[in-house]
Image 1 (cartoon, one colour):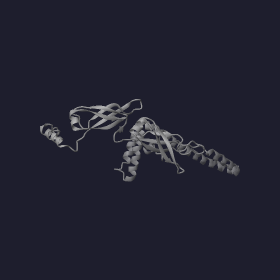
Image 2 (cartoon, one colour):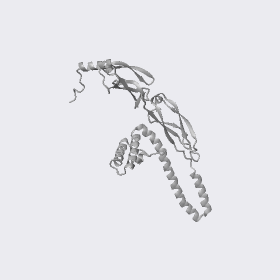
Image 3 (tube, rainbow, N blue to C red):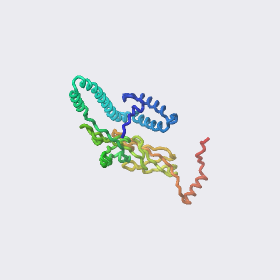
Image 4 (tube, rainbow, N blue to C red):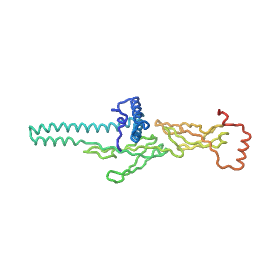
Length: 302
């Protein structure tokens, strides 16, 4: 995977910048490459995606710290390479000097010495990939297997231990499972991004878990007690009289792990469901209710 220099994308020369400087740089680049004002539309749309990705990563302290480690590693290698190239260029001047006054033999010895010095141990590049997991798998932690094709074309299977309570977007590192190092250097690492996927029952937002709470119209009017599934258990929830569709009931301590030994909230989103098929008796009840009820939901509309 190609390493993206988010600082360069935002027009910054160093990672020693404040959150305000990052925000200012983002606004300048977003305005400069906005598709609506940029004539090169295809280019600007791709560019704006990189700009948004860079800002999301660098504006959040935890993700910035993790990115900075990779940034220092990649930028450091590039600087070191430039220094080595500069030294080789300087060496060519000395070669001319030795060739002029000491002969070709001295030049050959100097060249052999330089070649030995040039064989510097270099760490292999990291490999990045990603894997999807369910909310419950991430909550409890689980071992997952992933297969990747190596440089020789063969599939290699890795076992990834996903820690309980991992956050969406965090990465698991397998040390030494990246590309091979050069001249005796260490292998790179394998970085697996964890994508926590919503399902039909739960949706994860930060450390809060959302779920739909479907109730009948008469349950909303009269109030009731219903069972609600949470992670690992079923609880009973009191529905107050007169609740409306769209209201949310918050249950503390039943959400996702907060990393401090606690949990977020389970938020039940109330949805009043209308029956599609009714018996004659049920239709009769609704017709009678329509005749005797003075309730008008549109009475407050001007």
